[in-house]
Length: 466
Image (cartoon, rainbow, N blue to C red):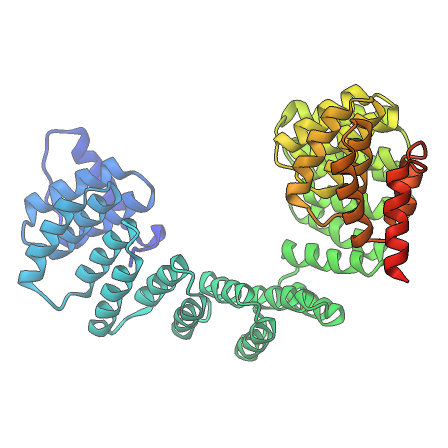
């Protein structure tokens, strides 16, 4: 296992770097070279790590540990063939060295042979007394294979070795979440907290699990204990604020969000939540202030631009809404959430040509919601572009063939295009799906409600229902 940076000998590092700057060659113990190499690799200074490996093997050509570090670098650089050759040599000397199997497993994992990696790690596990790292690696391999049950148990073993291994604790909870076993997660975390009652991470995760099954009171209690365990734990204050907000306790939620800002630098997410709470409290000037702060703090956060656009849209200030959504589009012109709002604003402003363009951009960017197809076709209907409306509805019906509203709208558009046969088929289908389609069709196409075909379809339906 790699050492922490503060465990390295500063003198060894300085002595090695001094050697690199001069023509002198200094002697180091093999253990010193290991420390130096670990230091550089952990710092991401791969070139210096390789230099240290080179000098180390020149001075200690038979050191298995230095050769394994060379293998580690070769695997990092995807030089698997040379790495395997060294591992073969090492295994001929010592076939009981678990690190050899770990490095072979690493190679298999990087080549996406995760089952092969697991088999090698299990072999390493049979050779190792200190198996903490191996269980952690096994857990990751099981995650790669979407085997969340086995991954969960591997990470649990890591926690058995070290209660303070919060990375494994997060992974255990992640596995429970993916398996949708929230009760299991709650039971596990409560057992863990019996052993570690002041672990803010576990209390925080327990609160999130309670929140997943809408046990708000229990979630609040868990977040409170997380804060008692660490009164600077920003995540606990933020999650507590979200629970209070969902319960309509907006002033208390604001207090918790504001606490996160006083503890550390303000975040766009905190500003956004505070703004939404103030809007709920009808403190509209304060809501605007925090929405502005949100987009100023993080111009790339789409939720911020959407919040301020929706705020002005709800206030019926469509020009301001358009101003901010256009700013958002200038930053990210491929965001379908921006384009759909832009389209609705243009519809509200009566600018149907621009709305048509915006709807097209929304669909091209990946928005295929039913309302998008319906409203786009409605826009083209207003523009009397019935052929384009027909094409839009044909696309929409590929996604939502059982939508009554798309079918009755398509029936009317087909009649406008003179296609009575398709119109009859679509109208009959719409009425079969929802009898209210008759009223909606008459309201949408009052000029077509008394045509013989429409009267016939509606009367057929009336007879069938009696």
